[in-house]
Image (cartoon, rainbow, N blue to C red; front, side):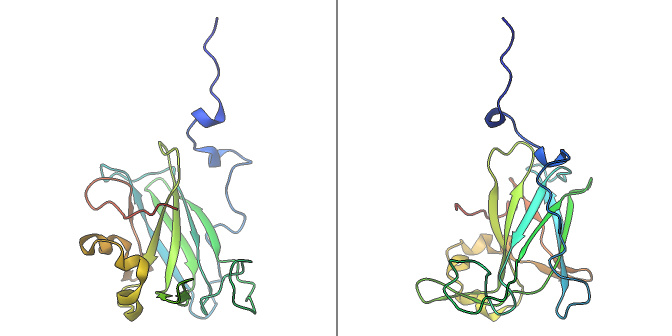
Length: 186
């Protein structure tokens, strides 16, 4: 009797390396380079040792500049048609990037306001489930009142703040260990 074959639920990716994998046709380009307010969000995905993860996938999902989603659960009228989704595989050095725009602030169901942020999903080797985090903009006054950011211990909030540099907004993701990025249960 031979060894039983593994099933997909017992197998960890990288599924996206397959021709019919999970890569997104629009990739990391949410907006064209010449769009007003376009910038590059970029970073490096690192594992628990601090080594780059060369076979990860980063996804982002965000509101448009007015804080609107093109989604049936967005209760505000006049959707902009903004898709707000991008997907980028990491390169051999763990790097990823997206061309996007800064989202507007968002209302919460409880009547509060969330600061402009971009939702980030990470898929990588050895991970049976995705992890989800957010990147917030440095120096944003609304960060102080953001209910999600306020729920994160003060000493860990910096793992959710991007850093402005010459390329745009840098946001590195650390999966474990010292400086581990804060991840949310969703």
